[in-house]
Image (cartoon, rainbow, N blue to C red; front, side, top):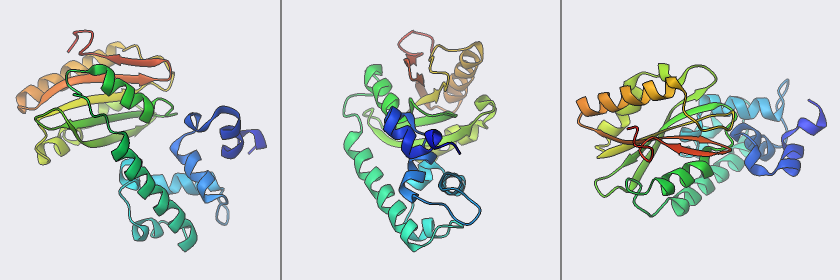
Length: 218
């Protein structure tokens, strides 16, 4: 890998927000394992422990990833704990249902610089407070192919009162496509059948965010 493309150099040139989660983890790991770069090892960690799982992982769970020894596991476990604490501190305190701006800005801070498409759900309680964040899809193919149970299942099990769907546009432009609009309508209909209110679908990109509810398209 050319030196200019290494995660540490990219961070120095563009800032931490421009890096993917794997690149950030690679910086923490510093070096790779035999036959694998630090970035390869970081990607292997996220394959076994996707981001939403990683931040809830213990030292022992991280230690079970192939290529991760005690020292690396301790570093990543410390990062996961720090992420949990900061996530709690940075959760929006405003009403997510009646203030799309708060939800949009929160999601921008979390996902705007993702280099792959991400589909997620914010689970809200009856007072519109964020109780859980669930990411059922991360990749480069069609997110709309995700099974509805992967989207609604955690909300039903956790007895969420409402949900906000979100996904990213790695291109940076948050404007919805025809496929995005069709997916939104489908999820709204499924939510109605399940008696679970889909109160918004927010698209996030580096250029801003788009709220279907704010545009009265939900």
